[in-house]
Amino acid sequence: MSNPSTTETVIYEIDNITKKVKGRKFMARGVVTLVDCRVAGISGDMFLGALIDLGADSEKVVDAIESLKDHIEGCRRVEVDIRDVVRGGFRAKKVDFRAEMEKPEMKGIDLIRVVEEAAADLGLREEAKRFASKTVRTLVSAEAKLHGATVREVHLHEAGMFDTPAEIVGSAVALEGLGLFDGKVYSTPVAVGGGAFKFSHGVVSSPAPATLEILRSKGFPMIGGPVESELATPTGVSILVNLVDEAVSFYPPIKPRAVGYGAGARDFAGVPNVLRIVVGEPLDYGLLRDEVAVIETNLDDVTGEVVGHVAEKILREGARDVSILPAFMKKGRPGHIVKVIADLDDAERLSRILMEETGSLGVRVYPCGRRILLRRSIPVEVEVGGVKATVSVKVAKDSRGRIVQVKPEYEDARRLSEETGLPLKEILRLAEEKARRTLR
Image 1 (cartoon, rainbow, N blue to C red):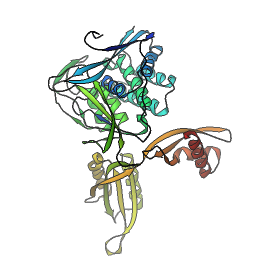
Image 2: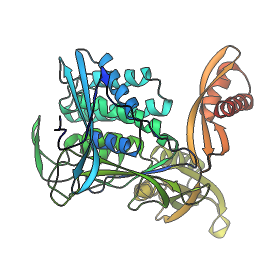
Image 3: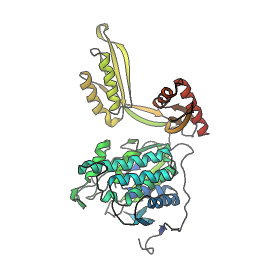
Image 4: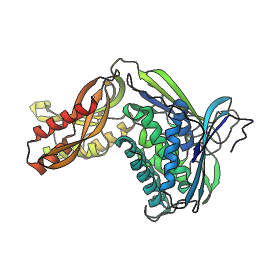
């Protein structure tokens, strides 16, 4: 624990919470979040500290971390230390954990169980539970791959300590409380540091192997430096890749409403070891700005089967959308125009796939600005003829929070239609009506 005479310390000892802090929620006019990890990278405790600094309800976060004790065998006592510190001249929130455990480390399958059971018992929304589950599974899968083991077999060292589930579950609770799952989340490329450092398996280069594997598997951009130290941890990047909708080089156009700063463990000379999270409103009243890549090519010498196969493969490879337009080519030949909408970072890779699959000698690629509504999916339980099923419903709102569109997911509705024999359009109507009632 830090010395109270040098830093203002708020200590939460689980059987005697000493201070209650009310949280805030960003909901009124839509929300855009930017995780700025370009300078100091990201770790789980830095991320959680920044969320608390934004205004997340500290009491709820601590209660959630305390609940982990019920899911970890031999865990007797937990302490959470939340305090203000200074890093490189900037004030930031520092979060530390201490737990008394019979076994200080866990297997991968146990870590997954602890996080998922805790998230379920806390009664979190589906978005928060899904985030926690995906984050811990991303982390464990990377460790398993690196060690040549299965998720069930892999034994975790640093990632298997109490800090990992505390950071993941605590972040899920804080994100839900702040309302940040309901908006769009951007991130800068993540700084990974440099040099070499020692951990349980010896000396390795920064970024750590698990960190690099997670970033590679998700195609998330990173940059080296600016110090010779580990800046991005496996837990931190697991949180990042499962939360962020889009990585950007520059801040999106927003009106900042709040800024949270989370402190790292070390204090570097000349580089503030601080993660910054900015929450704001979109500048376009009612709409968000977005930029995508449009990839096009003309085809007049491939069959319809090939065109259909290409569309399916491009979608599987991560395209946002694919359109096939009939056209007349040179000399009156019938053909197709294939139009792909993709993330900017995926344009080159998808262009190569399109050329390889079609035999086209070239494609047209250009950036395209879009205006989009805030969107999220909510689960809706529909009962038809005694059969209960959950249908995901996509809800679009403008930045004032007004519902503009409610659309049930086709695959969920189709499956329920086949099970009950009720017409698809009736299932869609029931799901939409139930969703609108739920949202009132």
